[in-house]
Length: 197
Image (cartoon, rainbow, N blue to C red):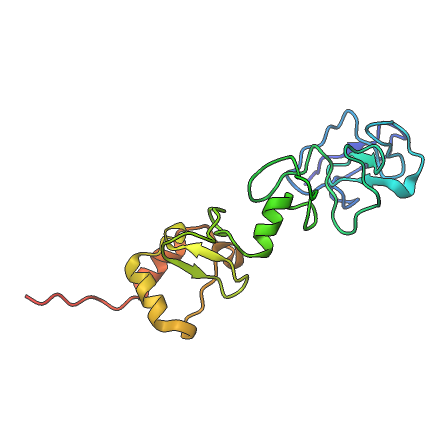
């Protein structure tokens, strides 16, 4: 099958979005201003000078560390996302807070602190550090999940609790399944309740 091609507005070179390793599937690209890696220039100052300080986002946009607002003192290690693409995975904000973007530009400062404490439900993302109510802990990522966020009934929760370390629970993210499915599959495994007449 044929795949879409991007054409550099500077040199005319054409490339599949997936060939140069820059654009993840599903990410929108402004084809009218796309530049290849060899021709990339800063979105703010339109210069390709100081290439060692030029950061390139997955979307193809490039920024000098000193052209960003606020400026970056150094080239960040790991993943970097441009101002148009960066968004906190937990709260959805596009503002990083005083501590800047953290954990490979995945979280704002406040949510990064919460993430490091594993202090929120991995399904609904609500802060669970002071919450009351039944929760189960994922044996893979060690994040807590509200039982209702994964379709677990009180009866299912009681059964899991009684099993203790003999039962392994994986949250939807670690198990690669949609939320709520676990509870339904668990109900089938639970012992039948005998009704005495």
